[in-house]
Image 1 (cartoon, rainbow, N blue to C red):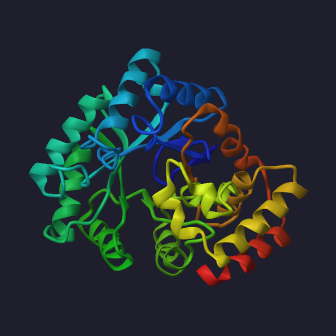
Image 2: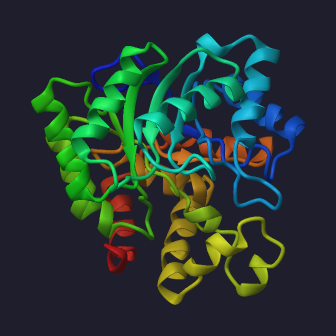
Length: 314
């Protein structure tokens, strides 16, 4: 388990992504994934009010509704650390005070809970000054409905300003950031966000940790992508350079009797600023490879090999 700095939130170092719930996983399958996750020792779930707005006929809220029904059915809300986000749901875009308060109440209703453990601003809102954003976030924490706040999809410059402003105003500072980071997307994080994590002692929960499934090793040709749930997300990684990384992942995985996904997540956990990667499972059978990552300690040579194979993305 890993303690998020400046909190009492002790999390399993694999953050289960809720983007599949109500999308590629129906209610019954979502419940099965969630049950298997907690049975294996997981306790940290990530969602957003906008999930799964990209699905046909959805305007978001699907994942939160499924989670709320699961919490109520299992009676386990107090044993799960819950993260969700505001600012991206159609009709609830932006970080104004009025929108943030309304979005929070609507998320709580869908989630069938009275509080959020970690509440992210999903996207920056340049129509709202950073100082105002900081004050609004502070009011949400003061309300008791939010325990801690986090930031996702801000530029490094605006994110750093957020931390500095919270410190200057004596307002609650973010305890976590959620950047994109994986073997095929390194430069933005390593050059822009990792220094923020170090400077402000903040937890890091990378999204797209498996590059939309590409780092599982199951997509090696264009034909492999046909019919895939995440075809549009993963297709951009199917390049000569991307496949070189997958080849090394598979080689190391075979040598360690592990899955490529496990190795890809273990590589992230080997980085000193990463707290827990976010990865999702659309069915329970996909969970063991994810849950095995914290126990797989890569050697320095294995990390260096993957660093070199993915250097073009850094």
